[in-house]
Image 1 (cartoon, rainbow, N blue to C red):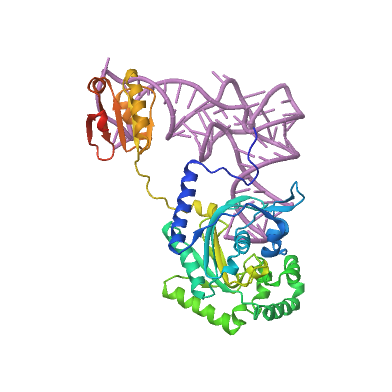
Image 2: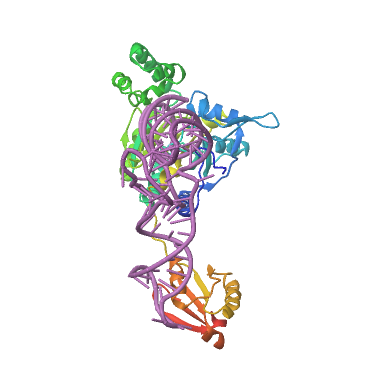
Length: 403
RNA sequence: GUGGGAUUAGCUCAGUUGGUUAGAGCACUGGUUUGUGGUGCCGGGGGUCACGGGUUCGAGCCCCGCAUCCCACCCCA
């Protein structure tokens, strides 16, 4: 038997119900916030991710499905969604058009990682990207949108918030952090020693307890923000307070993608094991410019659909559609004919085996149909059909023409 | 990529120190004295015990390899 590749799942039946329920719910909320759907390719030039996500990140450094295609192009399956949307935004010259552009997307992403629960090699994200709004209210709108989606799905969460500063305050903060870390160089783990060289901010995120002890005294970004970043960050907090969204400021929160600046946030669930980040996002004002577009402020987030799936509280399934059957073999043909006509507007399930009424009702029940419509010898004789509403238990025999 | 655990019916799982034809519940399917369901009763099908080797008179059980899933690290959604 040929099985699916490691970390790549089929989505069907019950899972598919949850999957589409999530996408429908999230899409509806995104539309209410003024976002429009965008679909971008699964395959992109590798350089796009190297430049946007950053070569020092693990995603680009070791997790991409990258290969040379038949035209000698260096390509890869997208490991995340933002880069492609930004690329499309620039390619369609929306940066030159000016104004505000808001997009949402959902689709498969690919990362070559060791699978775990909630961590797949092909996984699905739902995300939104907003271009052209520099107001911190838009940052708050992102967070409120995630919160709305999660609440609608009955999912509880913790929200962690940080500001990563901008090109004015981040570089000097980075320097003072590097100075600090270098002083305790001997005590830190190998990973942190590498991080100091490649991407020093990430040391803050180190899971190693002994490293964290050393970093307790390290300078904090939240205390080294420039005037504008600082006032934005406190404005954001007051907007969230005003909208009753609970959060905790975590000055060690670092996003794993290089393009973020200013607002960074992560939604955490405590109910799904170690892969606990269910949504993450933030502002990336420099990315459009960095990918050769006109300077455009931008902010967005992404949610991991598989991680959310098992947390979703689904609404009770409702009885729906018609079950149809014959009690005599002779009646089957007319049942099929009626069903064919009726299917133009309704879901119809036909049982091709004639059986007694009790068994038809049993079968209709099993299929969760709302109506059970049956033709037997009496009905054949009178050109009628017997229909029972399985919810309110009312029944009626009506002329076939009126069915 | 590193370390650990698991893998038996469609699903969730039992399976004694290695010893006859490998079990249960649920699901599926048929019947239930002949036209009223979901929740009664009786029956039935379904397993190369993940896969490949080895040890043994004999392996679901022991050993080696391998795949996948799960857990931790790592990373992130």
